[in-house]
Each structure stands twice: as C-alpha cells, then as structure tokens.
Amino acid sequence: MIARKYSPLLFALILSGLMSLLVSGIATFRATGPLPHFASLWFSAWLTAWLCAFPAVLLISPLTRRVVELLVEQE
Image (cartoon, rainbow, N blue to C red; front, side, top):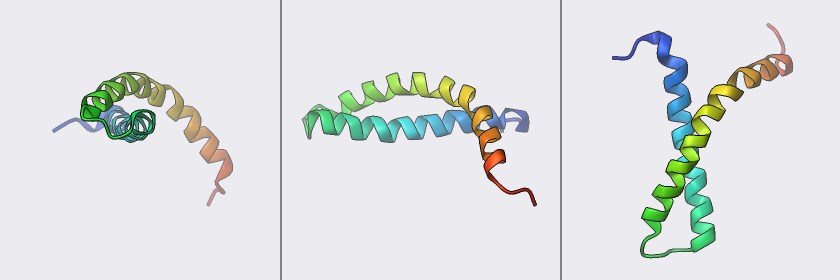
C-alpha cells in the first residue's frame, strides 16, 4: 500500500494517464482513421502525451485549486 502523503502524486499520475489516454486516442483516430496499426500509433502518442501531461498536472493543480477556491462560495 502507498503512504497517504503520496496521494497527490498518485492522483496526478492516474489523472494525467487517463486523460492523455483518452485525448491521444481521439486525436490519433481523427488524424489517421481506423488503420490496422492504430493501436501502436495510439500507444506511441499516449506515451508522449503522458510525459507532458504528468508534470503539467503537478504544476497546474495548485493554481487550479486556488482559482476554484476563489470561484466557490465559502460555507
């Protein structure tokens, strides 16, 4: 089991992985169509996207939390 102190990193890893998987799949399909080697193209695009998305989520999430706090009413 992973220690609770690592939960923000794990969250960022999973979120960036799933979102980059979805977006790269859509973008790859739109660019190539249903090719026989679509899965390998998608996988390659996903790895590249994930390598960019994970650090981006780590850097952007604190700013996003602050913006959300400004937009949401305090109880």
